[in-house]
Length: 226
Ligand code: MG
Ligand code: ZN
Image (cartoon, rainbow, N blue to C red; front, top):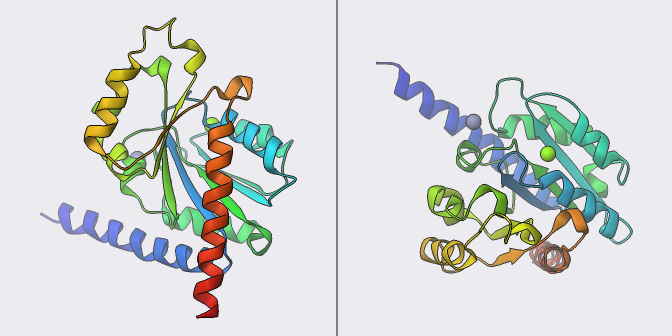
């Protein structure tokens, strides 16, 4: 009998902490992304390319969530000093209180952009607000062309969809028209960007990040000036 109220309280608490995170990050003008994708879809590879290409232009911080190991943090640390690894042990998603603690370990005041690489999982990360400005849903062709249709909540809530490993589409018989029509049916607004992170073909994403980050900071400055 007590199960349902307890679960609701957990989510309510998460939302309160997420709202605090959002307020803090917005006040500092940090554009924050929650990057959600399955294990092996290329999230960390994308972030390596992003840091390699943009770290001269922007101060970028990364919070990376995994059950175990600091391997992703070590890969990213080669390009950037603002990295925090969260090990969730059995936890299959990140929660707002973990982000709040990670923010205390980062030099947040200096950041322009914060990217949160969520635990590899297409399901429950979608339900936990972290205080981000946008959610990015990442798929790769090797997972199959049905994954957008099978994960409608992520597609519906995503501000951007990335489709990675497009160089392998032919080898795995990926039906791009099917994938695109599933995305469009679920979320008519969301842009879909094809990328090949391992070979550094990520220009549309970098352009989106530049434009979104800049317009975000512009909006924040206007809001502060009243
Ligand atoms: Mg990773
Ligand atoms: Zn979970």
